[in-house]
Image 1 (spheres, rainbow, N blue to C red):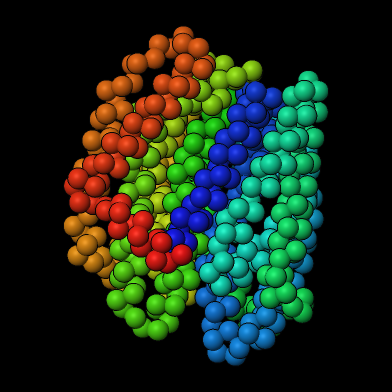
Image 2 (image 1 turned 90 degrees about the vertical axis):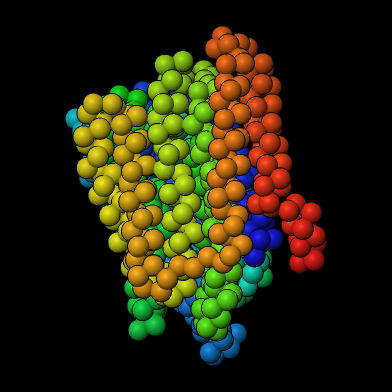
Length: 510
């Protein structure tokens, strides 16, 4: 399980790093203001729908259903089932894309009411419509990736999203060289989103996984209706972090540049969340589904315990690192071109508050698979809805007094509300269990992370604010490297991890 987790995490890390390069280039190309706010609001809408389908979301329903059909009726029946899912999802998304295109002015008004009555609304509608073709490709991509994950083949699904960012980076590079007008650049970049989705689909269709979804059929029989009744709640629940950001963007749209500040701050949160959270959703669902189906309580406890250790071991140091190093990280990554010092300070403040919610987001990713493996997608959905409501109410209050930082704090509070709801519900229904090893390691992980955070805090004043970009890059790299090294050594000293045993275990499973 850990080997598969590392495979998915590595692919997600590569994709997120390319995403940082992409967003840094977007900041340099568009800066902040009306054009950037319009493009990022539209891009955030597409991102929410993309996350609804991809990054492990559809696993919540597809993997348990496909494994159940295969084990009960054989591989041929499972292929026919996958073909019906693929055909139905593809047709539905084409129809939905057409409806969304027609209703786009209303949709943008809902997600960004502050744009109403301004030219920014028209810009956002145009950008969002240009991005819509991506949705027609995202459905087939997600089904094919789910089939690979169900068979334990995680490498291709982990690395295929790189094509999305590679295509956008290439387009931005050409626009920067061309010195294109900001509005024209935003339109051309929006059109590239659909091309990126097509490239990802073509790559997956070239694989053997495509033959596991044949014959391709459109079907609305009882089995498909039952599947989608489970799939839709799970897809919405799996995209909880994106829904919380949508809630924040709705409130932030009334404040100039706040949408952009929150977007860029959230991109930094998505790096550790993607590394841990996406891997949790991708690997844990098939692992727990098999354990629950075979009534293997020991395997269930083992999987949940290791997932919680991995979640805490990666999320806690990432949270402290992002809080302590928020300003130098933001300045290094985004303070270029049209993105100025004031933007960096506002984005860094938002990042510090958003980081407080990172452990909650990761905890949700670790807890939700226990429900999905039991074919329960409604409980995570209700927890997500509760967190969304909490975030909106608090954002209205805090956003009025503290701007983007108050909205960021509201998003973090919404994440903790969802996580605590899942914890209470799971404990009452089937009992979350951790083994003795996890109970022994978790406090030591917390102590090691706290020590690492203290070290980073003591070194925050090493670089003056006016230092050259190369100096900031070197010092920040040394700080992060030293923090990781100290954390790793402390885990070993405190007995929370044995790196030699971990490497030997990975070699045995290779």
